[in-house]
Length: 116
Image (tube, rainbow, N blue to C red; front, side):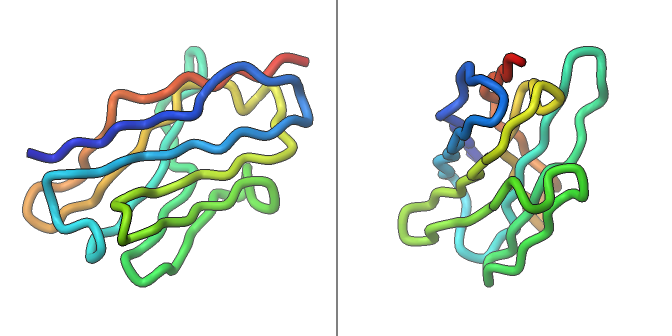
């Protein structure tokens, strides 16, 4: 059973930083693409960043230069380092796993709130 458990969310002032973590289990972590999505108030869920098993990354234009995605395969964990946070970054952040046999799975999410 695929399980994704996010942590590290919270409330921070504009300009601050947070580091999200996602602990994964139930599948072979090292060979699958992991990612982060977010959903702001009244908005649709959007892709923030992905990282392949080999470490190739993609970061959305809206967060490029501020957010960094990384992973530690030995720990089955993916991270999202968020710097220079702005109020528009507020939302629920979801960890994702892309599995060939069952599609994209999401965790329950962690709330990030950025105050101005």
